[in-house]
Image (cartoon, rainbow, N blue to C red; front, top):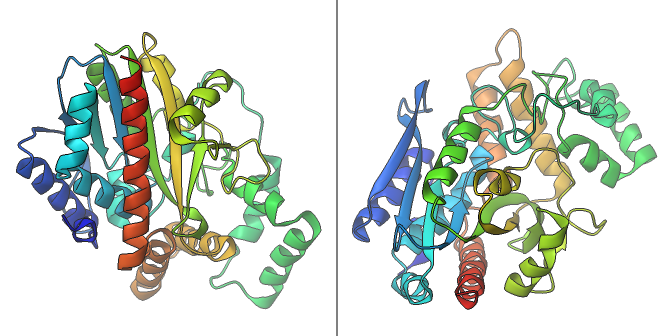
Length: 362
């Protein structure tokens, strides 16, 4: 098996490879399509689910990709390669652990080269209780007019104002204010939404169905964009009492977003926190794998350009929009064989570690 052959250049091609890998492994696919929304090439958009192993297994490992759309190139490639990784599947079978591959949690963003979904919602900020009061993100509210100036690229004066903000508060405060998530500006960046998205409702249904017979569930969510090129940071996002078990499975270098040295930021409404809600009978152990790509400020600037093009009135020239999309893709997916090999190797190792952790609990 050559893992790099499973990475694709578009959502349509990535989905085709995922479905082909499932077929080659003799596994059925359950597809949840979005009604009334099409992809960049006019294609169907769907969250595709494949399960390996005993459907009644009481231990299950979930592997999810593309909650942040354009980040899906990495996760999809890893999932497609693992579906035909016979030694990996044999390990899962020997351990008595089911494997659940959930491909493209946010297929719209994946196809359209956006981080958000069809409603401008950052899906990984959407898993909150919408009837609860939420504290406003004052840092983002202050930054939004600087992040999204009237023209793109920003003129010298607009650029100077943002630089002055960063110089005064620091890059860490800048990143935290931007990435935390906000619920007050529907056309702004990192908007968490006002109700549960299609992706939110669908992944919950998948968890309830597939996790009904489980006593223990592990969950690995694949991300890209933060940290040194090709480096995987293992980020714990879960309930405080679960981090020791996560470190037993994945190593002492599992890090919490509450620590200042994490490349990830504390966020509102991450997806993996719903495991306790949808499978309350099961012991849960969750982690996000964050694979580094490009420097932080370049990545944020790419997100700003994409967002400017999305909400611009009148619409921007097609060339500018296409350039913004390609730059965003380049910031979340490094189309080089060495990077693909690094991320696959580290993701596969994390899966094997989780299988051993789940298997040891039998």
